[in-house]
Length: 384
Image 1 (tube, rainbow, N blue to C red):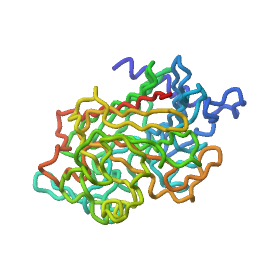
Image 2 (cartoon, one colour):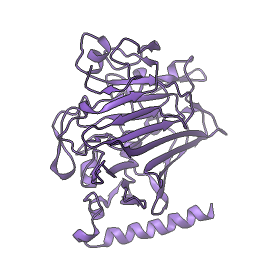
Image 3 (cartoon, rainbow, N blue to C red):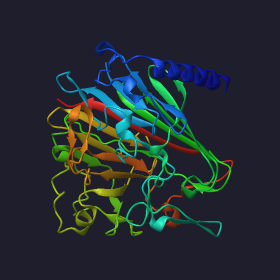
């Protein structure tokens, strides 16, 4: 613990120096073209910043502690040219909810995805959470952790540790929760994400990362041509409000079947199939065959244009595939790129949506004395 306290002190000093510094020259920009000075501000009394992770292969990952967000990810294509493969913004101002209420790149908490009508029952007591999405509680509510500042307790060239103190009653969730998100850039071009949380009162936890990936390296180029594989024979269907029905049904013979890799766009317009119509594309949870084994590939995405690949490994039971259905061209991201529908795709490892109200599904309840743990790896590569 002394190491973490010492690191936190060093980080605080570095942040203060950064906040007082002059605008950086071009030579000090990140490889993705970001100016760290543009990410320094004060949000509710906490200082935000931009942190850069690198490895010997030239890969670069930029993280802001505002919402624990992945801002840019630079990876090589089949010809060795580097591309930024994640959507985001050029400055902290564009991430603030009053300017863009978005989840781009965020470490989501307390509860990723939707809770039906925002209601949970713990030990017979009904808790009413915010209803911020079609009458449901989505991604922790109106001021979920994506809109809060994580503390940086440790950072070096390849890893950053972010912590969140979520007080009892945060968006009406019970319990004082101490959560940790650790991003590590590995030597083999993977972003290893480790989530931990503890509580002093019975509560629910379900964390994920909400990055929008575009392996074409250009948001003008839709992700519909990307080839997707999902290691799942079943999924959890939704109703017209995007809420899970409680069923687990086979993907075989439906547009939801990615057990054989296919283009994301192959069946995405098949509105004769209710789940595509209800979701306006893909916005569903797949029940992974990997059964908590994070040594197996849970999902894989390939961009034919660049050859860039993304493998997802996780110990979570589910993964939400969201095909950027609500991106509508009204948001302008990095380098002035307009984010249109299908400019990015999210692969969110998770427990199933509305698990607090589905006793037969894997539990998301966290008790005092227990530690919530979740692991996700985004591993990048190339296919010739």
